[in-house]
Every structure is written in structure tokens, then in C-alpha cells.
Amino acid sequence: WVIYYNINNKLQYNELISSAYAQFSNKGKRFSYMLGLRSELTKISIEDRLGDYQNKKNYIRIFPTLNLSYQLNEETTTQFSYSKRINRPSLWMLYPFNELTDLNSQFIGNPALNPSYADVLELGLLKHWGDLTFNPSVYYQNNSDIIQMYTYRNNDIFYTIPVNIDGEIRQGLELSLLYNPWKWLQLNAELNGYEFQQKGFYLGQDFDFNGNATTGRFSTQAKISTMMNLQLRYNYTGATTNAQSHTWSVHYLDFGLSRNALKEKMTITLDGSNVLNTRKTKTLTTGDNYIYNQLSNPNASRYRLTMVYRFNLKDSQSIRQAKSGNRN
Image 1 (tube, rainbow, N blue to C red):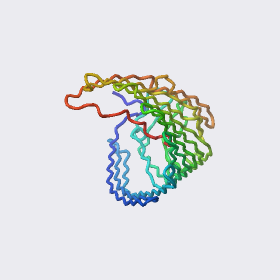
Image 2: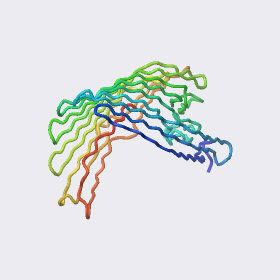
Image 3: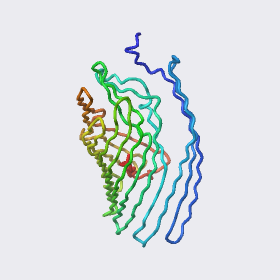
Image 4: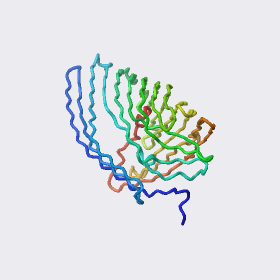
């Protein structure tokens, strides 16, 4: 065997994270608070099996948290929070093996990537009107060492690699709405809009850029009968632009349908992801001597049928509500 253009995945990556947590909280008649502190000790060693590349990282980070809540009346509560967060690069970002699904456009992981950190301030209001819950909030997020995709051209081949740039500041508004018109139906809507300012420089590429972005999610959970449940979730990510590229908006629909049988000892579940086959990413990247259009469709519509039989237990699980993840 001959290694094609020195493309190989002979990398040994070891990461050990040790952490300690402490929390203190108190609640009065109207006012409550919670103080938290988390400490992390991280040890990372990276080397290839040939001995050409070696890197070691040992660091300690402190992550404080503060949550304040004041109840104005039985239906209205104000909330304020501060937290320091960490966003570690995923394995596919670190993995240096070139993507060979397209020889003309290749993705290369970056084992030297560092995690990014964020200081987040948020002020929110929680309001109840009977079956309706309204939760608007404004937030400020200061991110350092953010991870950005860098695309360059070499010998008519386009390479994309994740890199760390200086940082990003976000100011945004998030709206959350929960409505239970009937006992058997729950509706949930989330909308997040923010503007951002990015700063950074990498290998001649200026990453300074100001822009805005919008994300949204709508989900519904319905108990069709005593034996059948349905969940639908619609996700939307608006068009975004940075210093190098413009990405068009993306939307897709997922669903799950479950049915109990045999006196609730068996549960049959049918779920589908991207059922409209609309989860396609279209990107236009512009460089000094090229314009690069890319359409990515990694996952077409998928369906899965699952059957579970319980010998001693009854089904006590309801359909889980989708986690809030629009901000990331």
C-alpha cells in the first residue's frame, strides 16, 4: 500500500479532564439565588506515530456561576444570570485525516485546536397566563478563541480547516413560548436572534466581520390516545455570513410516533429525521483568486422502527421535550 499524498490518520490523542464542583443556594419569600463554582484540570497529549508531531497541554480553568431570581407576583418572575462556559472542539475537528469523499474539496482536522471560552450575561422574564408561559430574555456573550472554518486553495484543490481566532461578541434576544391548550397537546416555540462582531487573523486571512443570525425551533407533543403519542419538531437556521463565506438558511422536520401494545408491555416507535429532505447546506466562499460554491447533503431522510418488550415493567416514559439548543 502507498499513502495517497501523505493522507493518514496515525494520531494518538489523549485527553484527561478532572473537575470539582461546589454550589450554594438560598430561597426567600420572593428572592432566591444560587452561587456555583467549577474547577477543571485538563491534560492533553498529542503525537503522531511517526514522531513528527508532538504537543502537550496542561491547564486549570475556573468556571463561576451566578443565578438570581425575584418573584414580582404569582405569575411573573425576573431572572438574571452570569456564567463562564467552555466549548471544546469535537473529535472530527481534531482528527487530521483528510476527507476524501471529494478529491477537489477536502476537510482537514486540526489537532492543535484549543477550546473556546464564553462569559455570558442574561436578563430574562418568566410570565404565566394560565396555560401559556412566555419567557423572553436578552443576553450578552463575550467569546474568546472561537473556532472558525478557514478555506484556502492549493493546486486547484480547496482545503477547509478549523482554526482559533481572537474572539466574538454577541448581543441577542431569545423568546420562548410554551402553550398547553389541552391536556393532550403541548406546543413549544423558540426564537433566537443576535448580532455579532468577530475579530481575528490567520495566515493572511482577516476574520474581522460584523453580522447577525437567527435560529428557531417549533415542537409539538400530542397524546393521540391513551396508547399513542406523537412528537413533531421543526428546526430553522437563518442565513449567516462571515469574513470568508455566506451560508444560506436551512430548515428541516423530524417526527416520532409511539404506540403501546400487549397491555403496555410492548412499545413500537417510528421516528423520522429530515423527512422533507431539506437539510442541505449551501455555501459560497470567496477568496483572492476564486469563488467556491458548495452544496452539502450529508443526511437524506431517515426512518427508524423500534420495538421494545418489557417483561416486568410498564411504560412510564413520556415523549421527551426537545432540548433548547438554538443558541449554539
